[in-house]
Image (cartoon, rainbow, N blue to C red; front, side):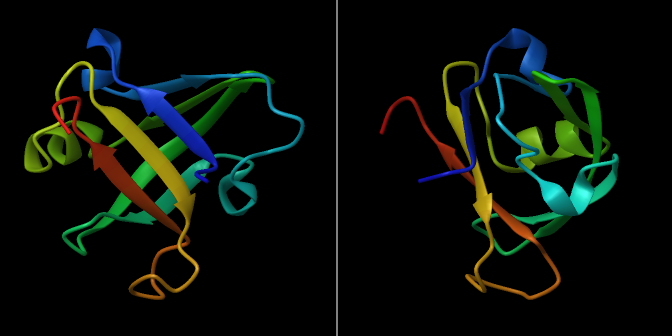
Length: 103
């Protein structure tokens, strides 16, 4: 099960905004903001900017729009982020998956 899973809406096409009540920080390695290393299904390493806006709001930006374009993300698709668990390159703490609404 993913740490965070979100259905993409129009606002998420420029930056991913995660609004959810968290018991603790979902991404401890980026807890104070900064860069977050994430690998996608094509094994591309992304360094997103991660910001904690409040206890229930997190934002991923930086090359997010390029990620959306490269992975053909559309409104209605779901993005899931989970621990890498050595799924791929050890250079990334997290992995990201796009689940197409057509799947």
